[in-house]
Image (cartoon, rainbow, N blue to C red; front, top):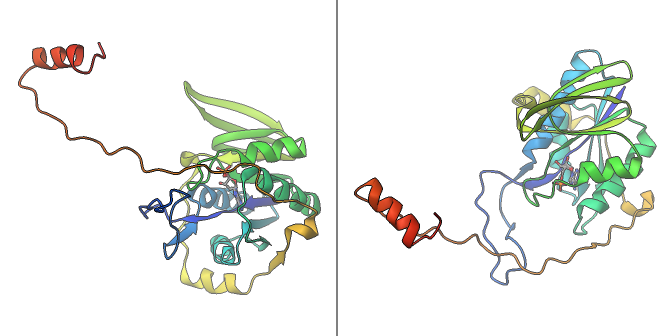
Length: 249
Ligand code: AMP
């Protein structure tokens, strides 16, 4: 079974991003970029399937600028066997990524595609769902447990009220939630090994996909600053303030 793992290069989760002065977006010049954390979980899960004898090959794929090669090398250092970069400088929105991934999936014929539930830069939470729709495959989003047996996958999903367990027929799409696993640390020998693994670069045109954005960002702004709190002497004052000032009770 081949497993395809889409990995996105995003601003590192430790970086506090700043909104550009013209409100057109956030400033990502000279900031640390890393693999989207949910995608690290996806690569780790694919590796566990391989180590458990369920997967035969793990292929990492990224869509974006040349530097996404670094993200793909990280995926291969975790253990992915090879990687594909769909290289473009275009501003890629989830629908365009889903179309590119569909084209890659049609070429590679994986039985399972494991994506992150969301990218921490755009917070879209759309790509996996769109890809499932475009391919016409079943999907299990927000997975906190995944087992594969023959042509069936069993996925436990984190839903509002608790956990839901569903069965899917492969080929299928799974998106990872935080508690699916704890990704391993990348070791130096594995970073060195990853440098020798195959990384193919293709262009969106070669896949016949138009990546023109469909949405226009009108404005990006900082969240409102929290005003300082006040100490109240007793519960009666708190209740009075909630009633008369905040008017919430
Ligand atoms: P999103 O829908 O943007 O929140 O992203 C959800 C997931 O789709 C990510 O965790 C990745 O697995 C995948 N994804 C999104 N954008 C890309 C990209 N440019 N390249 C590869 N995978 C991506």
